[in-house]
Length: 116
Image 1 (cartoon, rainbow, N blue to C red):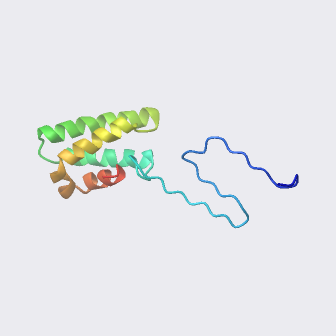
Image 2 (image 1 turned 180 degrees about the vertical axis):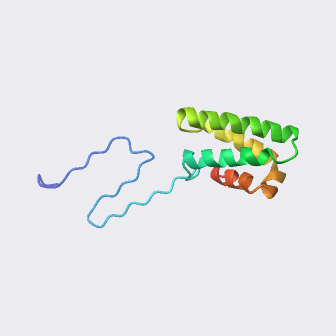
Image 3 (image 1 turned 90 degrees about the vertical axis):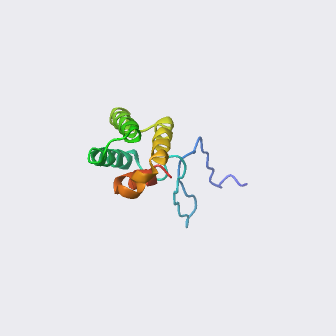
């Protein structure tokens, strides 16, 4: 390596996207508990499903889901994000409410944002 060669030093780059070189192209695809969706999109989906739940006959499952949605909305609006535990709880409740996924488009949309 000659003294004129450029040097690159990187710290922690987890969750980052970057490209190096004259023809480099960076493209980011993050997958996992939250999929590729932002918390703003998640908040919108949570609010939409909460509104739709008010229009269906309540059950023990819909009541639990409604409570979890309210808690998720509070968490996102106060902290700017829904933590992994909150997301997992919503996934569990949606999985338990499979009938809702077929009836309410908002339930399906939220399930998609949660990576189900």
